[in-house]
Length: 577
Image (cartoon, rainbow, N blue to C red; front, side, top):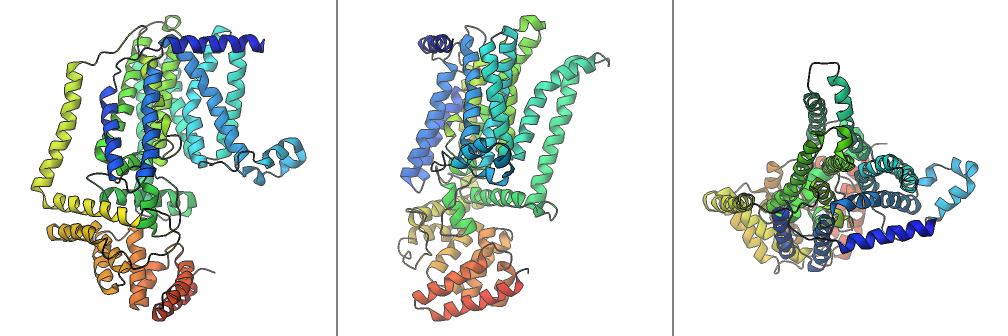
């Protein structure tokens, strides 16, 4: 039996591959813009090698999109069925690679073989993504698993039903193990959009309202309430609300978001380049020389690395796919239930998955920043595939191409006008150019895992000229002041460093990197009483002062080593018991 099913499956796969029909899709224009911005990201990146790796991953995402949309719609169910094993595989990979089982020692007495299997951690030497990333990917695939289960049950396909049910149980177990609350909430919201339709049918029978109106009211209340809650949480977190800051997870998440937003402002014109966020965050926000891997959320990460045009392209792809599937659902719902066809469930699954993907992007970056990059356009591709009419090929209308081209030209024109007419925009452009040049000097070979020595004076001069020009145009430019302060610290010119960092602190008193750098500049200048309020709440300041004591002694600067020792004493005296 297994051999027969395997033979039928391989035959279907060969048939589907043989019937691939590459043609235009509704999202070609924003995808083309995104592809062009990848080359811009290659040019602006500090590391060509790292950028090239990410370039190929994101190019693979575009290629996967066109492969999926080239599949005839009658094979869409086979693509949906793949989501089950993929989600189960992600769950098994995470469960067998992480050490989550250590907190469940009771399993050792109840299920010894199972606990022993988990203890082996078979995939431990391999790269293990963050549990939020795994949880988000599993949640994104769940609606297609549900649709496949409904299809198999309706068609009486027992093998599909069994395999999908097993994969669903494994995936749910993996989702629970990740403990990703944001993934659970996004999954509930995505499936809620689907569940609201039958609920609205029940409601419309009891109220003198059409079913579509009831559905719109229900989803409108849920979505507006959810977005309001998310906006409130982000606002309170950005303002440092004490109630929210009691959660270490929220503290870390908001710290990442605040840091990413500051970096976006530093590279507001061109973007910082592909695969640059970890180094930039470590260098200019955390101000540490050691390795840091992490991403804030997908929207800020795309904005930072590819600029505003890259972000606009990604949003156009996602929202365009959402519009396509909504229009397809409206066509399905005009027909009575038996005549809607099995693709009806796939369209609801696509809508739910897109919503989950877009909501998860607010809190995490599970697609653009990590190894899941090739799946960046997987859900839009599925949405386009299931939204297409049978045997339909898309023809890009001249009006659509004109509007898309006009939007791109409009963005460039607006940027040119700002750069020409606004001195602040010109200052931001100069600061952006200086930041890119500074990155190419400081970041190659990162992480160095050691404090920088004063050997960058000459090579940083071109970047310094851009920052000074920025301050000539706009004396309050925060980026220029911060970077000039950093350069002065590298040159051991602490007086100049304090001047520029104080100016930057006045512009942005909540910037973690500026607070830390200014505090250290005060220490090396001997102003310990001014440094203490800044460094007392800075993570790692005390341990770094211990390192600086030995480091300055090795640099033959005993007076600075003494300042570090005195600062360490003050910090230890202020630390909680």
